[in-house]
Amino acid sequence: MNERTNCVVVGGGPAGMVAGLLLARAGVEVTVLEKHKDFLRDFRGDTVHPSTLTLLDELGLGEKFLSLPHSEISYAGFPAEDGTMMRLADLSRLKVAHPYIAMVPQWDFLDLLADAGAKEPTFTLRQSTEMTGLIMEQGRVSGVRYRTAEGTTGELRADLVIAADGRWSLARREAGLIPKEYDTPFDAWWFRISREDGELEGRLTPKMRNRRLAVPLPRKGYFQVAYLGPKGDDLRTKGIEWFRESVAEVCPEFADRVDELKTTDDVKFLDVKMNLLRKWHLDGLLCVGDAAHAMSPVGGVGINLAVQDAVAAATLLAEPLRKGRPSVADLAKVRKRRLAPTMLVQGLQRLLHKNIMRPVMEGKRNGPPPVMVKLFSRFPVLSYFPARLLGLGLRPEHAPAFARRAMEPAGN
Image (tube, rainbow, N blue to C red; front, side, top):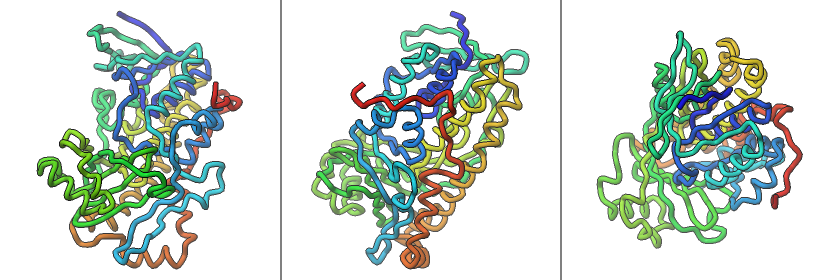
């Protein structure tokens, strides 16, 4: 089966869905391919930062988003070894409409974007459809090959392929684009555990002990916990009993509920990576989000940087796509616009890896350096700068005029 569209987006995550929605609102015929049958996949950071909340307002989706079950986090920090809390990023200092991080199950966020896209006549979301390869013709990417869950195969030709298929991007690999890898001293194991009303409300509070670090992310009715350990040390191989005891050691407040973890199947592994493509495009192909730059989970910024990539791509490429095929120079503008914000956030993450994460993983310390704690305690205003970088970024992307809509009431 051979088909054609203006733009095919590979991957129905936040970057792919935002790119698809914005381009469709520009009148571009766009097809988003998502290999899963729905968005019901758990164990993600699920953090929606102020920059993305502002974007949703501009798209007319802010009220609908805030009607979803969610919790709000106004500051993040690290516990010091003396028991005090170092506020690294105080988002309440930001002068924006939503000075907090919203914690929302990602499937709800993606369903919201899918519903908005369905209202656009040029938007198509094809679930249970997996890209299996790129179509290369005369030195350029001219579409993708795909396979459905039923086994049907076909080709979808397009003027542009946007690779938004994550850190293990097949499109990137097929294109021969190889990212530069940065050192990450830890891996992550995700699990959920019950949460009482008001418990750890409004804050992100990592816990550190014995070469382990846990970050309980508050959701409605439960915590989604990122449990970090030294790189290459698979904690699940030690058995569920050991894992429960280890969790209770790092988070004593969970000792009465670790039995909720029945087997190691309740613990999901994430191979933490941080990398950056030197070149984000080929003729006919553009990589965005994790496909262009995998982020560390520190700060939970990956989703929001991916969304900003998508907004920049739609803003810069809508007009070239309306006229036909974007040039290589058009595609290069996206990287030029998003490279500095990406490198700055990765620079902060690498600094935190070196000064906090690695000493914890090596058992040298159970908190940030004392000099950092003293500095942020004496000058609380310093917490504005990490909040600005993590919450908004160096260059927040705003919805282009063609994509803006009046606010839709939550009930519609």
